[in-house]
Every structure is written in structure tokens, then in C-alpha cells.
Amino acid sequence: MSVNYQLEKSKLPKHVAIIMDGNGRWAKKHGKDRIFGHHHGVDAVRSSLELCGELGIKYLTLYAFSTENWGRPKDEVLGLMSLLVHAIDNETTNLIKNNVKLNTIGNNNDLPEDVQMKLQESIDRTAHCTGVTLSLALSYSSQIEITEACKKIAASVLASDINVDDINPETISANLFTSEIPNPDLMIRTSGEQRISNFLLWQLAYAELYFTDVHWPDFDKDEFCKALEVYTNRERRYGKTSEQVKQ
Ligand code: FPP
Image (cartoon, rainbow, N blue to C red; front, side):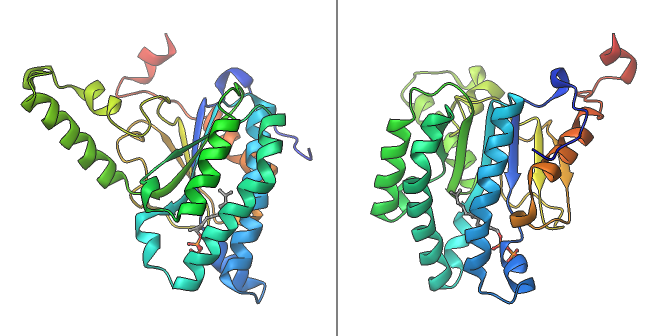
């Protein structure tokens, strides 16, 4: 690891969420098709995951495919789905070796059957792992996630399982795909765009945001450490004063 950052371990995030952006621009820069960028994006997934393991960051959530991405050219969508199948096939043994538990968030049923099957196989094979939990957001839309949570809660009210007055933020959280994982502490977006793009809108309420111009395939351990160093120097106040949080 070519990393020289002085990272204070106690200040590291527990959960990092990443919008992996810029694969297409990276490919163009190299005079190649967009899918070439996605292929190289898998290397950046591997190194980010490795770094989380090395530093004891327990949760990594990656925005791999949004519901809006279904609208991309057919070739690119098919290429991404096939890449996913191959990546899961190639990496599952490594995930187990590195104690990584695979999880997905999003509307899995929208995915082609072979992708669903591969994912489920890998989820089952890594279910016992206790190191990093890697959540892949696939066919994911935060607005749909929240809408579905509202529908489930409304149904519980109609069935008299809960009272309207008992609905609180925890009720919403408990009905999201992420009910089993803590909210992200840090959200990184690569490739220069500074927006959240329908990713974890509820869960990012108090996350620190970090934006970098680096395209996702170039986001190596060194770049990840830079983001972590910035994070460790931030003061998270959760609406309180600086004096209060220093107490
Ligand atoms: C955004 O870049 C990237 C994606 C929509 C796909 C990300 C997928 C991978 C990195 C492969 C995932 C594989 C695994 C195993 C998780 P973009 O295409 O929007 O780039 P652009 O903005 O430059 O066009």
C-alpha cells in the first residue's frame, strides 16, 4: 500500500458510501468505449474494499446502477449486467477469503435473472462473513425506496398494527433497504459532479460529503485515504455547537 496518510483510527468512518462516477469520461480520455471504463471501475471497487478491510471500516456502500441507468443505451446496460455477473463470479472466493459479506439494496427483481441468481449465490456464500459489509446499490432509487417504506407503514396502520402517532424517523429507517446497516458517515462522489443523484437521501442526513475530480477508475487507495483524511479533520456537530461536541 503506497499510502502515507496519518489516519487517526478512532476518527475513521464506520460506513462509507460512494457514487462511483466518471467511468465513461475516463474511457473517452483513453480513446475507448464506455464499457472499458466500467471494466476498470471494478479494479477501483476491489482496492476500495481492500482498504476498508485494512482500516477496519465496517460498511462500504457503492452506487453501481440507478433506476435511471436503465435508460442508457441498450449495449451499455447489457455490458454492465454482464460485467456484474463476471465480477461476482470472479470475486466471490476473494470476498470470502477477505471476510466480506455481500449485500444489495434496490429493486433486485428488475435485474436480469442471471444477475439475480449470481448475486443471491454470492450473498448466501458470504452470509457468514463478519468483516466489511459491501452493499451494492443496484436498480436503486432513494425516492422509490422511501415511497415503498411509506406504503408499508400505511398498510401497517390500516391493519391496526401501529398507530399513526407512533410513526417516527426510526419507523421509516426500519422500512428501508438499509434497515440492518448504520447510516453512512461519509459520502464520496468521484468525477467532479456535486450532487446526490437519488442516492440514500434519507440515510445521508448527517453524512459528511466529499467530492473529488478524480474519475472512478483512478480512485485508488491513495485517493480514498485523502478523502478519509479530510473526513477525520471535519467536526461533526449534528446541529449542536462546536463547544458542546468538544465536551
Ligand atoms: C458511473 O459512471 C458508473 C456507473 C453507472 C456504473 C458503475 C459500475 C461499476 C464501477 C462496475 C460495478 C461492478 C461491481 C462489481 C460493483 P458513468 O458511466 O456515469 O461515467 P460518466 O459520467 O463519465 O459518463
